[in-house]
Length: 206
Image (cartoon, rainbow, N blue to C red):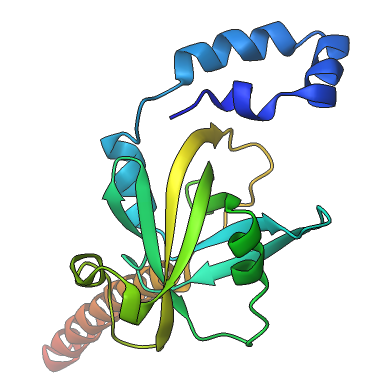
């Protein structure tokens, strides 16, 4: 994969960084952080996401951001530099699909709000009809639930992790429900024990 700084810190971005005195620091940091491929931890993070945001641009350079979501595992790592997911039936606007057909470059944000972690991926995307997709790839993706029309594949060009600053710590509903159910079960067990103790005291005449 490419050096994230070499890919993104160009033109006026680099000039502003130089004026602010941070360009050299960033260049040095990203030399150490550049990876040839996604690490095992990176791939594990990707495959435990339930959603991500994907940005594309139209022919005039206007950006567009779309949300993609699904069950855990809907986003699959096919190789250390390639990820994929099913493209579910949506509102039939086909904005991202049209953009990618003209310019495959995309940017992905993968969020873990509970742990306040954010992965940024730059890559080249392709969208293919399911009938034209590799069956070996489709076998690796969940097919139950929302019907899909296409397969989205992203060849990762560069990646970066953001610091947790300013990421709100949201808790997924399934995690909150599990914690609430466990706490309620503990309270119920304690209540039952107290009732039994009280009944024993009454029966003994105390």
